Image (cartoon, rainbow, N blue to C red; front, side, top):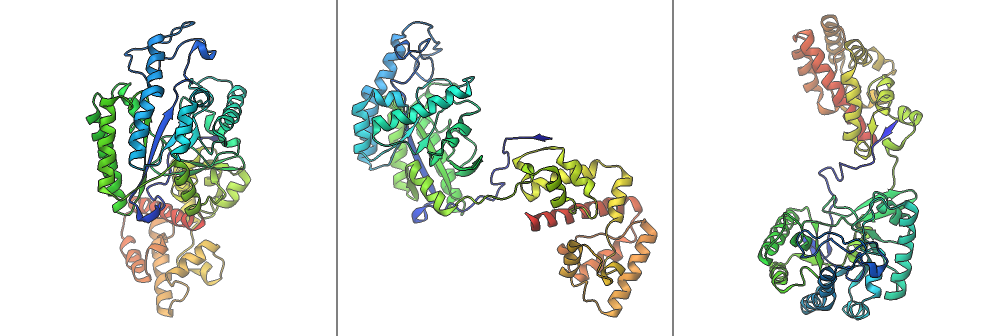
Length: 470
């Protein structure tokens, strides 16, 4: 049995109404990453200097040495850039979420005091600003626990949100397993919050961004001027604003770093964007904690049975009748590479149909022949399956006049004699009159055409049954 862990469906084109406070068309989350003093450095017990996200072109780690220029650039973020951004945000009364590396916060008491004075949310950005790829699971778990402990000691309260950034494949699971976090942000996979089930934990995820992010000043392809940053943020804001105006409100994250956007020429682009967004209106500027609290209240998670997580017996018992009297289709579908994308009616329908379509003509013919005649003898004897009974009743086929019943019986006999299988149509899509019209028209088809038509109708019936079930 193969199970694919990635969720490539998300809200599948039908996201919930975010219902942002005040009828806002867009929620905007300003995130300031505080990493200065937590980066790779032999001063911090690391094997080499930092090489990530600076204005040094082509920077490389220096094993066993301090990189004075790199340290100085990071120092600028703490010494000057942070305070410039502090002034920009507080002057406009804008809420900010800090992604604070615990060791960096511990080395920045004045900045922490300013964050708290401004009422900013201080979330955890891990213990150190280092790469977690390849880190042993036990060591990453230890560092997560130590980050929470040190954060609590430095800030005065534990973090309620988390973003590692340079994470491992285990990070989201390990942070969720702490049970201590209202939200985590180590994903980039949606424009809205969503819930993730991690064991017994229902964990809220607030996806982050690497594109509406000043890190693009330090990576290629990237921004060169503050004007480019402004234009990108404006375009993203306007697009999401328009979607919200059309009744599909979303969330916009903006990622910032003091050593990058804190430089004067780059900061000018951020200032232009903030003033533009504030003037346009319709935006709810909020901390990630506020967004998380709103989402949890508006859209609390409800667990349900997921097809991809069922055992074989349960799966076949639940879905073996979706294709009439043909449990072998569900048995074969169970062995596919099922995952979260198959936990919806549409997703599971695709898996079941794959098995039906890949079967031989004889097996598919057997599926067609498993369907009862419309308004036939089985219906009269009340020997239909529950699904077939409900379907035929939905079009009034259980309450025919004598003349109508006689016509159905004549059509059934003529159709089977010509094609070798019963007439099949998705009854729930049609009225009694439409069914009769289709019956009369399709009798004249050649067998191959009608076989293909009947197979498509079988698949349609399966989809309608799954939608009713899931």
